[in-house]
Length: 124
Length: 306
Image (cartoon, rainbow over all chains, first blue to last red; front, side, top):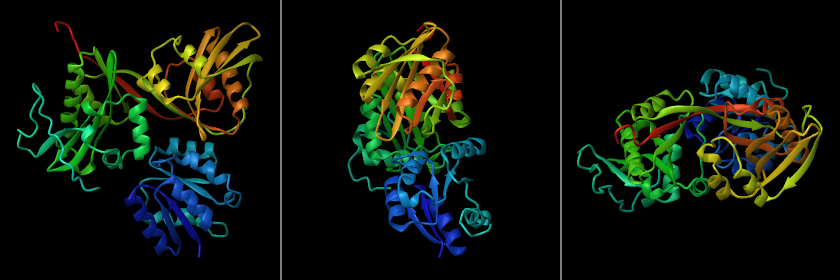
């Protein structure tokens, strides 16, 4: 089963994403801060990481750098998730080397397809 | 939300409104009556639906209070029906105060709590007899901007929060000679800084934050300048550029080139660069990107006739 790790501190967003992705057949793990997220990513080696850019202990851009330093995680797709305006969010995601960008608010109808587009071997 | 079991002191200083007297269930309590865990919970819940939430941990809030001289005795928590509903903090330095972290929980908005807490910290600023107070509001946060304007704050300038992903310098820079300087020398340079820094990068903020260093460059044509920065294990930040002689763009290109030649794999975040800073064009050329903007606003306490 394809595993998605959601690193996000907003419980409402975690709840929405978890429900949608579970219903779409994904195994979902969640972490509410960067330290826990990095630890879970290292232990579980997810297929995709959804990473909020604004976390309480470390911002998402900096955490991405930490994730990329873990050898077995360097090829895991990491998708930036943020409520920033589209242009700013996408520019930031591209500049920092995220594999993609998803805008908040998250949408029930499209989230599963968005995530599928980042999973190797799956099609949106 | 944690359980608030401690007995909080209701604000009732002489000359101030008695907030329980209104009978609307609101009490204004000094923030010093709360723990950092409690304060950060209020803060994070108040920003949960923001465009740029910038959540904090208790550790980072404690650091924030220390770095920016936030006076918790003069900061306030709004209690509504016995539960925390909002927060507003006040930084205090000689000559001015700084209003920061005004937050109201989403389900407690539109009942005047923000204004009540603003009036509380403005009153404390008046008691301190400072000539003015400043604050920053995220650009496009219209409700907050209008509240501050209604209370007399006026727009002073726009400030940039900027990032640069880790990479060695990729831009062209003029040839330069470089000198690396330690914390003490960095402080000496900051004291000679031109321009008006925002609260976050005033010298006391940078001194409190610590761990500063600097570099100085001189170009072949005699143009020269310096750059002060803070290096933490994961990030560069608190970047201040100054051109002493010559073209700020060329000096800026050289300074940034020198910085990332030294730290090619370090991420950078720096706050409150004025939009009109003469080095911004060089910084953009060198890979800095704008994350978002703030508007700095100022309230002059003593108007004509006061």
